[in-house]
Length: 260
Image (cartoon, rainbow, N blue to C red):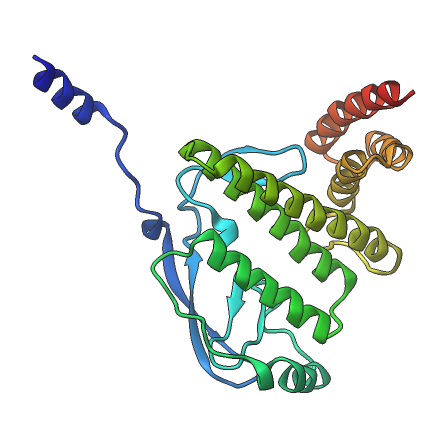
């Protein structure tokens, strides 16, 4: 009887979805060494968004696209998020050759899927390259934002596994997440003073909302309140982002009361 029940449970169990089935190899030309490279990339329209976090991180079913945004040249070490990869000046190329390529050790190997550790390494290569090429503040902040999101995603995966030692690991990852989100907030605040919109694919109300949420997270409550009030009064903001801003305003006001 137990064997029959076990067979039924196995039949009714959710099918295991292979992350690799969401991906394909996309070709890029490296602007630094002119090499032809291929990286694992999410198939357009293949993954389904199931929700988004309060800070706009999209959460997908059965796949983590964040792991596949960095593009890394395995030959020379030039790395950038996909949206920025082709765009380099001659001066930037020279800087990367001098400060990245000369010391780069080719340890990148393309796999059917990437682990969180591999993805984090690729993001950190992107950040190192962004610093060397003197990228705009928004680009560096965007990399830090995505690193923070990636670390949160890894925590969620470990929490589901419920394995011994994961609680300590999640605590370490949470500390790193906050460190990178703080850098993202500071970078975006700098960027909005000198850069134009859209910024990192976000229009002004969306960026203002993101900054308001991060400001609340790091107890800059006056900044957060001012930003959400501006979004709610804006003629350019969509109803969707205004609704989010109203919810966030309630959270900011509640946190202000707690701190008094």
